[in-house]
Image (cartoon, rainbow, N blue to C red; front, side, top):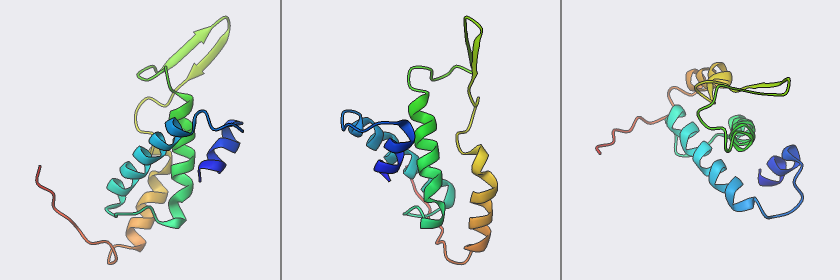
Length: 107
């Protein structure tokens, strides 16, 4: 998965690997939380790739919703990086409702 992410970002070196691995790990944890699973299902692994790229591209611009410089305008997704995948996540959860064990965590 790391090589796929690097290819999408146009990286060939290993300089950013630790940073990408950290982002990828956090994205996987969040997706597992949304799914109620311990592992990301293979069918939804593409979400980890795409959200990791989104988050990497936003480094240094966290919290901004838009950016304008000399006529160039960039607008960032304002809230949830997983919003674009909500339908896929819900469809997977419905299809696997009996497979996922519910866990209660006390903090």
